[in-house]
Image (cartoon, rainbow, N blue to C red; front, top):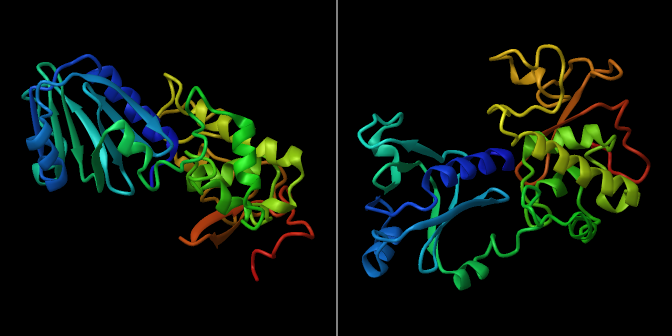
Length: 285
Protein backbone atom coordinates (compact mmCIF):
# COMPACT_ATOMS: atom_id res chain seq x y z
CA UNK A 1 0.00 0.00 0.00
CA UNK A 2 1.43 3.44 -0.89
CA UNK A 3 2.84 5.52 1.94
CA UNK A 4 1.45 8.94 2.75
CA UNK A 5 4.31 10.74 1.00
CA UNK A 6 3.47 9.11 -2.33
CA UNK A 7 -0.20 10.07 -2.03
CA UNK A 8 0.78 13.62 -1.10
CA UNK A 9 3.04 13.96 -4.15
CA UNK A 10 0.33 12.56 -6.42
CA UNK A 11 -2.26 14.99 -5.05
CA UNK A 12 0.16 17.88 -5.45
CA UNK A 13 0.77 16.94 -9.10
CA UNK A 14 -2.97 16.68 -9.75
CA UNK A 15 -3.57 20.03 -8.09
CA UNK A 16 -0.90 21.78 -10.14
CA UNK A 17 -2.30 20.30 -13.35
CA UNK A 18 -6.02 20.67 -12.72
CA UNK A 19 -6.78 23.45 -10.24
CA UNK A 20 -8.85 26.20 -11.86
CA UNK A 21 -9.71 24.16 -14.94
CA UNK A 22 -13.21 23.24 -16.10
CA UNK A 23 -14.31 19.66 -16.70
CA UNK A 24 -15.20 19.13 -20.36
CA UNK A 25 -15.85 15.38 -20.19
CA UNK A 26 -16.15 12.80 -17.41
CA UNK A 27 -15.69 9.07 -17.96
CA UNK A 28 -16.01 6.22 -15.48
CA UNK A 29 -16.68 2.49 -15.42
CA UNK A 30 -17.80 2.68 -11.79
CA UNK A 31 -21.62 2.65 -11.56
CA UNK A 32 -21.82 4.71 -8.36
CA UNK A 33 -19.78 7.53 -9.90
CA UNK A 34 -21.68 7.34 -13.19
CA UNK A 35 -24.96 7.66 -11.31
CA UNK A 36 -23.83 10.86 -9.58
CA UNK A 37 -22.62 12.21 -12.92
CA UNK A 38 -26.06 11.60 -14.45
CA UNK A 39 -27.95 13.05 -11.47
CA UNK A 40 -25.74 16.03 -10.61
CA UNK A 41 -23.41 16.50 -13.58
CA UNK A 42 -19.63 16.72 -13.40
CA UNK A 43 -19.09 18.36 -16.78
CA UNK A 44 -19.03 22.14 -16.49
CA UNK A 45 -17.80 22.19 -12.91
CA UNK A 46 -14.43 23.69 -12.11
CA UNK A 47 -11.78 21.80 -10.17
CA UNK A 48 -11.03 23.94 -7.15
CA UNK A 49 -8.22 21.97 -5.53
CA UNK A 50 -6.76 18.51 -4.99
CA UNK A 51 -5.37 17.51 -1.61
CA UNK A 52 -4.20 14.48 0.34
CA UNK A 53 -5.19 13.47 3.83
CA UNK A 54 -3.24 10.50 5.10
CA UNK A 55 -3.58 7.93 2.33
CA UNK A 56 -6.73 9.45 0.82
CA UNK A 57 -6.94 11.85 -2.14
CA UNK A 58 -9.67 14.48 -2.34
CA UNK A 59 -10.54 16.28 -5.58
CA UNK A 60 -12.81 19.25 -4.86
CA UNK A 61 -15.16 20.39 -7.62
CA UNK A 62 -17.29 23.52 -7.58
CA UNK A 63 -20.76 23.37 -6.00
CA UNK A 64 -19.62 21.12 -3.16
CA UNK A 65 -18.81 17.91 -5.00
CA UNK A 66 -15.79 15.95 -3.77
CA UNK A 67 -14.20 12.89 -5.37
CA UNK A 68 -12.65 10.74 -2.64
CA UNK A 69 -10.20 8.04 -3.73
CA UNK A 70 -7.94 5.50 -2.06
CA UNK A 71 -5.24 3.69 -4.01
CA UNK A 72 -4.84 0.63 -1.75
CA UNK A 73 -2.24 -1.58 -3.49
CA UNK A 74 -3.20 -1.15 -7.14
CA UNK A 75 -4.41 2.34 -7.96
CA UNK A 76 -2.64 5.29 -9.57
CA UNK A 77 -3.39 8.66 -11.15
CA UNK A 78 -1.78 9.71 -14.44
CA UNK A 79 -1.67 13.11 -16.15
CA UNK A 80 -1.78 13.43 -19.96
CA UNK A 81 -2.12 16.05 -22.63
CA UNK A 82 -5.09 15.55 -24.98
CA UNK A 83 -4.19 12.90 -27.54
CA UNK A 84 -1.13 11.69 -25.64
CA UNK A 85 -0.79 7.89 -25.45
CA UNK A 86 -1.69 6.36 -22.10
CA UNK A 87 0.93 4.35 -20.26
CA UNK A 88 -1.64 1.84 -19.02
CA UNK A 89 -4.37 -0.07 -20.81
CA UNK A 90 -7.77 1.53 -21.25
CA UNK A 91 -9.25 -1.59 -19.65
CA UNK A 92 -7.54 -0.46 -16.41
CA UNK A 93 -9.17 2.97 -16.55
CA UNK A 94 -11.64 3.61 -13.76
CA UNK A 95 -11.98 7.41 -13.98
CA UNK A 96 -11.02 9.96 -16.63
CA UNK A 97 -11.42 13.67 -16.00
CA UNK A 98 -11.03 15.75 -19.16
CA UNK A 99 -10.26 19.46 -19.35
CA UNK A 100 -9.31 21.48 -22.41
CA UNK A 101 -5.59 21.25 -21.63
CA UNK A 102 -5.13 18.27 -19.29
CA UNK A 103 -6.55 14.77 -18.86
CA UNK A 104 -6.34 13.02 -15.46
CA UNK A 105 -6.83 9.24 -15.56
CA UNK A 106 -7.28 7.01 -12.53
CA UNK A 107 -6.13 3.45 -13.22
CA UNK A 108 -7.18 0.44 -11.15
CA UNK A 109 -8.46 2.65 -8.34
CA UNK A 110 -10.35 0.34 -5.96
CA UNK A 111 -12.09 2.98 -3.82
CA UNK A 112 -13.69 6.00 -5.50
CA UNK A 113 -16.73 7.89 -4.20
CA UNK A 114 -18.44 11.22 -4.71
CA UNK A 115 -19.32 13.14 -1.56
CA UNK A 116 -20.61 16.44 -0.34
CA UNK A 117 -18.91 18.11 2.60
CA UNK A 118 -21.59 16.74 4.91
CA UNK A 119 -21.44 13.14 3.68
CA UNK A 120 -17.64 13.19 3.80
CA UNK A 121 -17.75 14.05 7.49
CA UNK A 122 -19.79 10.89 8.05
CA UNK A 123 -17.73 8.59 5.86
CA UNK A 124 -16.48 5.66 7.96
CA UNK A 125 -12.73 5.19 7.66
CA UNK A 126 -12.20 8.79 6.64
CA UNK A 127 -14.11 10.80 9.21
CA UNK A 128 -12.17 9.16 12.07
CA UNK A 129 -8.69 9.65 10.60
CA UNK A 130 -6.01 10.66 13.05
CA UNK A 131 -3.92 13.79 12.52
CA UNK A 132 -2.39 13.68 9.03
CA UNK A 133 1.37 14.16 9.16
CA UNK A 134 1.60 16.10 5.89
CA UNK A 135 -1.17 18.62 6.43
CA UNK A 136 -0.41 22.18 7.44
CA UNK A 137 -2.74 21.78 10.41
CA UNK A 138 -0.91 18.76 11.86
CA UNK A 139 -0.95 18.92 15.68
CA UNK A 140 1.78 16.87 17.31
CA UNK A 141 0.04 16.95 20.69
CA UNK A 142 -3.20 15.56 19.26
CA UNK A 143 -1.26 12.77 17.55
CA UNK A 144 0.42 11.89 20.84
CA UNK A 145 -2.95 11.84 22.58
CA UNK A 146 -4.42 9.55 19.90
CA UNK A 147 -1.51 7.11 20.17
CA UNK A 148 -1.66 7.21 23.98
CA UNK A 149 -5.34 6.23 23.82
CA UNK A 150 -4.26 2.73 22.71
CA UNK A 151 -1.71 1.61 25.33
CA UNK A 152 -2.45 -2.02 24.41
CA UNK A 153 -1.09 -1.72 20.87
CA UNK A 154 2.46 -2.53 19.86
CA UNK A 155 4.27 0.56 18.61
CA UNK A 156 4.68 -0.71 15.05
CA UNK A 157 1.01 -1.60 14.77
CA UNK A 158 -0.07 1.71 16.28
CA UNK A 159 1.96 3.77 13.83
CA UNK A 160 0.16 2.27 10.82
CA UNK A 161 -3.29 2.59 12.41
CA UNK A 162 -4.68 5.49 10.39
CA UNK A 163 -7.30 6.41 13.00
CA UNK A 164 -4.45 7.24 15.39
CA UNK A 165 -2.01 8.98 13.05
CA UNK A 166 -2.48 9.22 9.29
CA UNK A 167 0.13 8.72 6.58
CA UNK A 168 2.56 6.13 7.92
CA UNK A 169 2.90 2.85 6.01
CA UNK A 170 5.00 -0.25 6.47
CA UNK A 171 8.29 1.27 5.32
CA UNK A 172 8.12 4.39 7.43
CA UNK A 173 6.93 2.34 10.41
CA UNK A 174 10.23 0.45 10.66
CA UNK A 175 12.33 3.48 9.78
CA UNK A 176 10.67 5.75 12.34
CA UNK A 177 11.04 3.19 15.12
CA UNK A 178 14.73 2.71 14.31
CA UNK A 179 15.52 6.43 14.13
CA UNK A 180 13.67 6.91 17.43
CA UNK A 181 15.55 4.04 19.14
CA UNK A 182 12.23 2.38 20.01
CA UNK A 183 11.60 -1.34 19.63
CA UNK A 184 8.50 -1.71 17.40
CA UNK A 185 7.19 -4.60 19.52
CA UNK A 186 6.96 -2.59 22.71
CA UNK A 187 3.49 -1.56 23.80
CA UNK A 188 2.47 2.07 23.49
CA UNK A 189 1.70 2.04 27.20
CA UNK A 190 5.33 1.19 28.00
CA UNK A 191 6.73 4.30 26.33
CA UNK A 192 8.06 7.30 28.20
CA UNK A 193 6.38 10.55 27.06
CA UNK A 194 9.66 11.66 25.51
CA UNK A 195 9.81 8.45 23.45
CA UNK A 196 6.28 8.94 22.19
CA UNK A 197 6.97 12.55 21.25
CA UNK A 198 10.17 11.51 19.46
CA UNK A 199 8.27 8.92 17.39
CA UNK A 200 5.77 11.52 16.21
CA UNK A 201 8.46 14.13 15.55
CA UNK A 202 10.63 11.71 13.54
CA UNK A 203 7.61 10.49 11.58
CA UNK A 204 6.74 14.01 10.51
CA UNK A 205 10.38 14.79 9.71
CA UNK A 206 10.76 11.70 7.50
CA UNK A 207 7.53 12.19 5.59
CA UNK A 208 8.18 15.89 5.01
CA UNK A 209 11.68 15.14 3.74
CA UNK A 210 10.20 12.85 1.11
CA UNK A 211 7.82 15.40 -0.41
CA UNK A 212 10.33 18.12 -1.16
CA UNK A 213 10.50 19.38 -4.74
CA UNK A 214 13.68 17.40 -5.39
CA UNK A 215 12.52 14.22 -3.63
CA UNK A 216 12.44 11.19 -5.90
CA UNK A 217 9.83 8.46 -6.07
CA UNK A 218 11.62 6.11 -3.66
CA UNK A 219 11.56 6.63 0.10
CA UNK A 220 14.80 7.93 1.58
CA UNK A 221 15.49 7.98 5.31
CA UNK A 222 19.21 7.14 5.28
CA UNK A 223 21.71 9.24 3.35
CA UNK A 224 25.17 8.24 2.19
CA UNK A 225 27.39 9.08 -0.75
CA UNK A 226 25.35 6.82 -3.02
CA UNK A 227 21.98 8.32 -2.15
CA UNK A 228 22.39 11.03 -4.76
CA UNK A 229 23.19 8.44 -7.43
CA UNK A 230 20.24 7.74 -9.79
CA UNK A 231 18.57 4.32 -9.75
CA UNK A 232 20.18 3.02 -6.56
CA UNK A 233 18.46 0.20 -4.72
CA UNK A 234 15.81 1.04 -2.14
CA UNK A 235 17.93 -0.79 0.47
CA UNK A 236 20.62 1.89 0.11
CA UNK A 237 18.10 4.59 1.01
CA UNK A 238 16.84 3.19 4.32
CA UNK A 239 18.12 2.25 7.77
CA UNK A 240 16.48 -1.15 8.31
CA UNK A 241 13.58 -1.82 5.91
CA UNK A 242 14.11 -5.04 3.90
CA UNK A 243 17.62 -5.38 5.34
CA UNK A 244 17.08 -8.57 7.33
CA UNK A 245 20.38 -10.20 8.38
CA UNK A 246 22.38 -7.27 7.00
CA UNK A 247 24.53 -5.30 9.46
CA UNK A 248 22.95 -2.36 11.25
CA UNK A 249 24.29 0.90 9.83
CA UNK A 250 25.00 2.13 13.36
CA UNK A 251 26.29 -0.85 15.35
CA UNK A 252 26.81 -3.72 12.89
CA UNK A 253 24.32 -6.09 14.56
CA UNK A 254 22.27 -8.13 12.03
CA UNK A 255 18.85 -6.63 11.38
CA UNK A 256 15.88 -8.69 12.56
CA UNK A 257 12.51 -9.07 10.82
CA UNK A 258 9.19 -10.36 12.12
CA UNK A 259 5.52 -10.29 11.10
CA UNK A 260 3.41 -7.81 13.03
CA UNK A 261 -0.17 -6.65 13.28
CA UNK A 262 -3.47 -7.97 11.90
CA UNK A 263 -2.15 -7.83 8.32
CA UNK A 264 1.06 -9.67 9.28
CA UNK A 265 3.26 -7.02 7.69
CA UNK A 266 7.00 -7.47 8.15
CA UNK A 267 8.67 -5.17 10.65
CA UNK A 268 12.45 -4.62 10.67
CA UNK A 269 14.57 -3.53 13.63
CA UNK A 270 18.03 -3.70 15.21
CA UNK A 271 17.99 -5.70 18.48
CA UNK A 272 21.02 -3.78 19.75
CA UNK A 273 19.90 -0.23 18.95
CA UNK A 274 16.23 -0.97 19.75
CA UNK A 275 16.20 -3.18 22.86
CA UNK A 276 12.85 -4.69 23.68
CA UNK A 277 12.66 -3.77 27.36
CA UNK A 278 10.99 -5.58 30.21
CA UNK A 279 7.47 -4.27 29.68
CA UNK A 280 7.00 -5.40 26.10
CA UNK A 281 6.06 -8.77 24.67
CA UNK A 282 8.87 -10.79 23.12
CA UNK A 283 8.70 -10.46 19.33
CA UNK A 284 9.31 -14.15 18.81
CA UNK A 285 6.78 -15.50 21.29
